[in-house]
Image (cartoon, protein in one colour):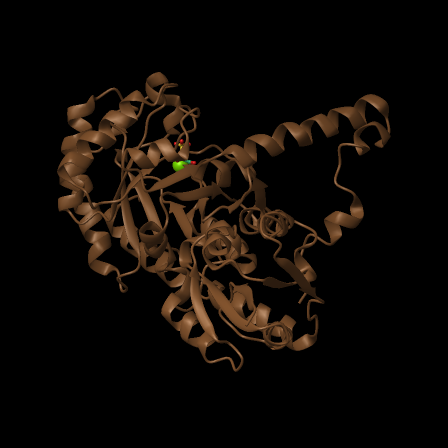
Length: 431
Ligand code: SPV
Ligand code: MG
């Protein structure tokens, strides 16, 4: 009997999937691949049910003969092993980033004369509702909050991008690229104090108050599902920080990062060019402990950020602090540097990992930006944060447009660089 293969990356079975199985059954024995968590995250979205539950769900569909695991977005391994006579898929992959997967399948089938069957994608109200429900579920605080810990376990490195508004949230949520035959997207979002303040035209000195920062979180959570890491600056007074922890936890934020500085905080990228004071170890540990004590869930993470390298206090000081902060209950360590070369960051990671193989490490490669994610991961880094690049790309583009309009006394010259009106009004999903 001929073998017909299809791959599902879904948490809900709807009419569209049943239609594919039904069509597939006309050609032979139906084998369904369930995409594993790691591949699902890159391809589509975070699964809201476990891999085992997804397998059971697919096994229960009448007409499915066998369920296997697909570990990658591209079909190479599955097709080489299974050699299906047919692969069946909806025609929704003809356009967009998924086109690369289609091309991959066609090339693989071509190696031995296998055939591709494409069925019209089922677009109706029920399918749309199922898709929306799946997405909305992921946006709920109880689903969003634990996701960072889950991602740390699943991903080689959690790729995090700065957001400071609904619009930048949408970019973090929806941008998918096809590159070198692979699909990829960001895993998490960083609500940067620098960019949140800059968007409001204010300096990054803990001037924008928490109520206003919470508004930014609200704007982002309204339109996204991905987990949030909040830049908590110094955390303020321990007596205030406990309230911040509670609020963030309730909002569905996954982690807060607080830095070991005290007094008037300035942005770390100023380094020692401005006066900045590092907190003493005991005092900062008390703040970490206070935060951990009031936390209500096991999901939320308090990550301690070490400023020793920024403030020229040396590697030993950074490592001593890391040990103390972990002992005080920190769920992760962020180590920062403003050197162009990643050498001191890598030395810290290597030495920290020799004594602690578990505690997640976070880095922000704004200055040492030549290092790749794979290199960072090989030194034990778990989370990489691209902390300000969206803001830094938007500002010059907006400024250039403003200048051109002033220069030419009309918008025509700027227009060819701008997103068409039609595209910008369809950028936002309607309910
Ligand atoms: C931020 O993005 O606000 C940060 C990271 O704190 S950095 O600007 O590199 O200090
Ligand atoms: Mg900051």
